[in-house]
Structures are given as C-alpha cells and as structure tokens.
Length: 302
Image (cartoon, rainbow, N blue to C red):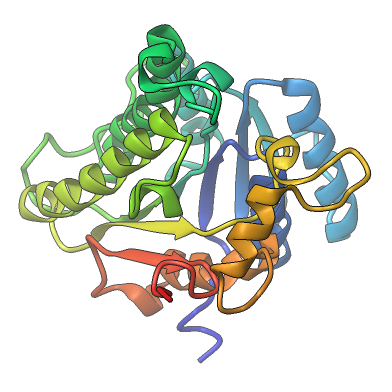
C-alpha cells in the first residue's frame, strides 16, 4: 500500500510554492522522499524554504544543488513564459524529467472584488485582468511548458544536460506525468465579493477537464490532469478579510464557519492526502476530476 501511494524519487514541481499552502506541500513531499522544485517570484523566500527543508531532511546539499528527497529553489514568474521556460530548463538539466506539476500559484486583488459599499460598476477591469492573468494564465503557461517535458518534447540548447531530445508531439504516445491544478471553492459557487477570483478559478476547472482529453488522446494514458478545490483556509491573501487585527473572526468569516458542517477553517495539512493520491500511482486511472476539500461547505444547504 505504501508503494502504491508513494512519491519517493518523483520530481515534483510546485508553483506558488512559498505561500502558506505551497510551503506545506513542499515540506510534505520532501519528507516523503520526492525531489521538489520550488518555483516562486521571490528567490530569497524560495531559497530560505529550500534551506529549511533540506536541513530537516538530514541529507545536506551537495555542491549547492538539492536532490533525492530534497528541494531546489528556482526563481519563476508563472505569467512570463520565458521565465517558466528557464525554470523548466534548470529542472530538466538537474533531474532529466518531471513527474508531477502542482499549479499552486494564485491570488486576488482588492480592485477585482465588489465589497458591500460598491457595485459591479465599480469593478477595476485592470485589477480583474491581473487576477485572471495570475490564476488562469499562471496555470496555463506552466502547464504548456512542463507538460511538454512530460511528453518528451524537451528544450534544446547547448551544454551538458540541456538537450533533452524526445519524441515529436503525437508520435509514440509515451507521455508520463500528473498535473494537479489548485482551483478554489469559489469556482463551484459564485461567492459574494470575489468576482474576478471566482471567474478565474472556474476557468481553471474548465481548463483541467479540457486538458484531460487533450493530453490522453494525443499523448497516452500516462498523462493525467486533475484539480483540487480547497475550501476556506487562512492564508496571507485572505487573512485581512477573515480575521480582525485582534485575531477574532470577521462577520464574513463567521458566516463561512456557520455554512461549513465541520464548523472550522481547513488546516493546510488537510490538503496533503488528496495531493499525495493524485501525485502517486494510486490515481493512475483518474483524470479530469475536481476533488473538493472543504469540510462540507459546497454540499451544505440549510
């Protein structure tokens, strides 16, 4: 059973890896023996996280490069294709393959929300574009780049390890890998205020289902893509909305808890079981699905 759900030795790439949820994912997969590539815009934070988990793993870095149950920090802006391509080049140069991509980058902007004292006519279109760009295209671009590596179409270039020549698209159908997109509860039901974020995450779910058929039909059953919709977890992005300066819950947070059968927010670690399942061979016949991890919020009515 442990082997079925095991991820030891797998190369796991995580975008948005330095956030509250992403950093928990990094720590977990390193502890499980995976080679984890931490992608983030802030290299200082990414390297600090890598140093932390590498020290904890008891397997120190060799020559400054983490491998085998450790973490490698790589700077990456998920909405900049050139930046994503460079991160993939570094990953392939070091490990030679990508087994799992977790698209965890995302976020919201105040201008893309409609608070009680505003109307839809006050929506900041540029802010909404930014939210869609980060959440949707910040998923599409890394998927295009890293899925290409999964199907064997690698970057070409000069230097050792930079040429990863593989099959042409559609030839041989030998793709292998699992793509896990982090969606949101707001993709399932239109929550008040979060106009831009909900729309963008709904698009991520649709893209996930589309990509399931696109990849499997053209590159074989070894390529899977699924999504997870976390419910309400306290993160840096939503903390000001859900908690007061003294740490007490805001009225909105109290309403959320009242609508959640479990009566609480989720803990980041409670996403890990679903992630482990989707990253492992235990889910090898699972693709195009959305798994909701929300303490019953979506299922609950009155």
